[in-house]
Length: 231
Ligand code: HEC
Ligand code: HEC
Ligand code: HEC
Ligand code: HEC
Ligand code: HEC
Ligand code: HEC
Ligand code: HEC
Ligand code: HEC
Image (tube, rainbow, N blue to C red):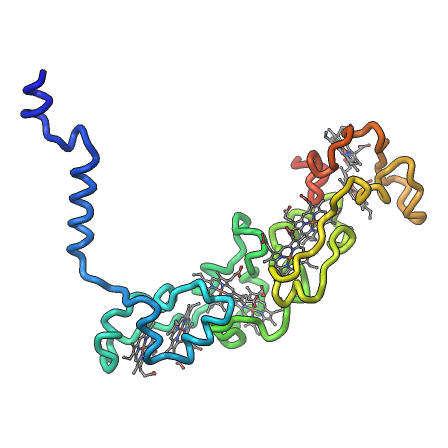
C-alpha cells in the first residue's frame, strides 16, 4: 500500500499544489499585454483627468480600449492604435437592461433610448454624465419600475412613498431618498379604521391594522412594489 501511495501513483493525484505551481508557471510564461491605467496618463492627460472625476472612474482605460502595452511601447505604430468602440452595442454590454444588475446602476433600454444614434454622440465616454439629468426614476431603477408597473400598485407614483430631492437625480448617492419607516405609511389607503383619502375607490382593500400582520412592518410580508406577491 505504502509503495503504491508514495512511489507508484503520481503526487498530482493527492494534492492540488503541483497543479497550482504548474498554473503559475504557465501564466508567467505568457507575454504581458496590459500596460495599466497610469501608463496612459503621460500622453493622454485630458482623457485621464476627465475620467478620474467622472462616473467611469472605476473602469480602466484598457477595459474599453483593449490591451495596449504594444501601443505604449511604440506610440507611432498605427497598426497598434487601441480600438475605439463607437457602436451602441459596446456601451449596452454594461448599460443594457438586465434585471439582476445592482440597485441604482444606470441602465437603458437599447430599443427605446435614443434609438439609431450612437451613444458617444451625446455621452462623452470619459465623462458620460448625460447632457441633462434623467427625468424619470426608471432611468436608474428600471427593475423596480418594471415590477411595479405590472402590480396592483401600478397607479401609485414613486413619491407617494418616497421623498426624493432634486440632488438625487444629479448625484444619487449623496442624497438618498426617504423610505417608509412605520406601518402608518400604508394606513392612509389600507387601514380599515381610516377614512382618508376621501376620494378613495370604495373597492380599495383595507385590513384591521390592530390585528393584521401583528406588529410587523407591512413590507416584511408584502414587497411594496409588488404587494400582492408573485403570481
Ligand atoms: C508615449 C505616449 C503614449 C502613451 C503612454 C499612450 N498613448 Fe495612446 N496615443 C499616443 C499617440 C501619439 C497617439 C496618436 C495620436 C493621437 O491620436 O493622439 C495615441 C492614440 C491613442 C488612441 C486613439 C487611436 C485612434 O485611432 O485615434 C487611443 C484610444 C489611445 N491612444 C489609448 C491609449 C491607452 C488606453 C493608453 C494606456 C494604456 C495609451 N494610449 C498610452 C501616445 C501614447
Ligand atoms: C467607457 C469606455 C472608455 C473608457 C473607460 C476609456 N475610453 Fe477612451 N474612448 C472611448 C470611446 C468609445 C472613444 C471614441 C470616442 C469618439 O470617437 O467619439 C474613446 C476615445 C479615446 C481617445 C481618442 C480621442 C480622440 O479625440 O480621438 C483616446 C486618446 C482615449 N480614448 C484614451 C483613453 C484613456 C487614456 C483612458 C483612461 C484614462 C480611456 N480612454 C478610457 C471609451 C473609453
Ligand atoms: C465596463 C462597463 C462599462 C462600459 C463598457 C460603459 N460603462 Fe458607463 N458606467 C459604468 C459604471 C460602473 C458606471 C458608474 C455607475 C455608478 O456609479 O453606479 C457608469 C456610468 C455611466 C453613466 C451615468 C453617468 C451619470 O452621470 O449618471 C452613463 C450615462 C454612462 N455610463 C454611459 C456610458 C456610455 C455612453 C458608454 C459607451 C461609450 C459606457 N457608459 C460604457 C460601466 C460601464
Ligand atoms: C440623443 C442623445 C443621446 C444618445 C444618442 C444616448 N443618450 Fe443616454 N442619455 C441622454 C440624456 C439626455 C439622458 C438623461 C435623460 C434621460 O434619462 O432620458 C440620458 C441618460 C442615460 C443614462 C442614465 C443616466 C444616469 O445618470 O444614470 C444612461 C445609462 C445612458 N443614457 C446611456 C446611454 C447609452 C448606453 C447609449 C447608447 C446605446 C445612449 N445613452 C445614447 C442622451 C442620449
Ligand atoms: C441618476 C440615477 C438615479 C435616479 C434618476 C434615481 N435614483 Fe434612486 N438611487 C440611485 C442610486 C445610485 C441609489 C443608491 C443605491 C445603493 O446604494 O444601493 C439610489 C437609491 C434609492 C433609494 C434607496 C435609498 C436607501 O436608503 O436605500 C430609493 C428609495 C430611491 N433611490 C428612490 C428613487 C426614486 C423614487 C426616484 C425617482 C423620483 C429615483 N430614486 C431616481 C440612482 C438614481
Ligand atoms: C406603496 C409605497 C411605495 C411605492 C409606490 C414605491 N415604493 Fe419604493 N419602497 C417602499 C418600501 C416600503 C420600501 C422598503 C423599505 C425598507 O425595506 O426599509 C421601498 C424600497 C425602495 C428602494 C430600496 C431598494 C429595495 O428594493 O428595497 C428603492 C430603490 C425604491 N423603493 C424605489 C422606488 C421607485 C423607483 C418607485 C417607483 C417606481 C417606488 N420605490 C415606489 C415603498 C414604496
Ligand atoms: C396612495 C394609496 C396607497 C398606499 C399609500 C398604499 N397602497 Fe397598497 N394598494 C393601493 C391600491 C389602489 C391598490 C390596488 C387596488 C386594491 O387592491 O384595492 C393596492 C393594493 C395593495 C395590496 C394588494 C391587495 C390584493 O389585491 O391582494 C396590498 C397587499 C397592498 N396594497 C399593500 C400595501 C402596503 C404594504 C403599503 C405600504 C408600504 C401600501 N399598500 C400603500 C393603494 C395604496
Ligand atoms: C405577517 C405577514 C403580514 C404582514 C406583516 C402584513 N400582511 Fe397583509 N397580508 C398577509 C397575507 C398572508 C395576506 C393574504 C391573506 C389574507 O387575506 O389575510 C394579506 C393580505 C393583505 C391585503 C389584502 C386583503 C384582502 O382583502 O384581500 C392587504 C390590503 C394587506 N394585506 C395590507 C397589509 C398592510 C397595510 C400591512 C401593514 C399594516 C400588512 N398587510 C402586513 C400577510 C401580512
